Amino acid sequence: MSIGRILGVLLGVVIVFYGARWLRDPHRTALPFGSTDLSSVQGALGRLPADERTLVESYVRRSNGDVLPPKFADPDNPLTARTFGEAIALEKSWQEKMRKQQAIADARAAERDAAMAPLRAAVSARVAKSEVLTRDEFDARMMAGAAQSGASGAKAGHRSDDSGVFVVTVAIDNHSDADIVALQGSLEAKDRDNYLPLDLCWVDLNEQRTIHAHSNLEIQCANRNFIAGPNQRAFVADPPGRFEVVWKPRRVSLSDGKVLDSKL
Image (cartoon, rainbow, N blue to C red; front, side):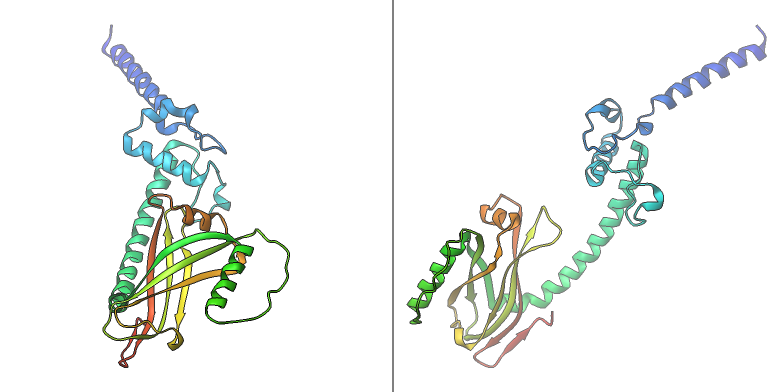
C-alpha cells in the first residue's frame, strides 16, 4: 500500500472519529420547546460537566421553556437559546450581569444601613404577630379597642363580610434614655420567592403616642379595604427561610430635643 493511500485511510479515520464526536456533542442538543421538563434530554444533559449542566437547568427555569426570535428578544436578557450550548453561553452572561448588579445593590444597601444605624440603635421595630381576619372580625376588634379607649357611638349595621384583612401587630422598643415623641419608618419583609419586598407597616407616630424611655409600644397595621393576597397569607403561615423582616427607621424625635434623621 502506498504512503498516499495510507495517509488517505488515516485521514478518513480521523474525519469519521471527529465527525462522530461532533454529532454526539451534547452542546448541540436541542432544548425542549415550550417546556421546563428536561426528562427527554437527560442522556445528553448527563454528558455535560456539572457546572454546565447547572447552567442549562438554570436557563430553562428562567426562560420557562420560551424561545424568542432574536429580533423580538430583550437585548439585556435575550431568551433565544435553542441548544444546550447557546443556553450555557446566555446563562453565563446573565449570571455575570446579575453578580455585577448585586454588587452595586449590596454597596447601596450598606450605605443605607450605615445611615440608619444610629436610629436603629435608638429604636427597633419587629412583628409581634401577623394574622388574616375577616372584615367582620377586624371591625369587631377595632370597636373593642375604641370602647376601651373611651370612644362611644352607635354600631353601624352592615352585611356579614368574610374577606381577609392582613393585620400586623408591630412591637416598637425605645432603647434610648429619652422619650420618643415622634417616629417615622417602615417595616417590610424581604421575600425569597419575589423580587419586591412585602410591605408590612408604615409607622408614623407623634406626641399623642409617646414611647417612654426604655419602654415599648404595640401598634396594629392593616388596610380594611385591601384583601389579603397569597404573599400576605404566606407571611402569616411563616414558611421557614422565606421572609426576612427589615426595620427602616426614617426619623426619630426625642424628648430631650435630639432628632435622628436617616435622610433616606
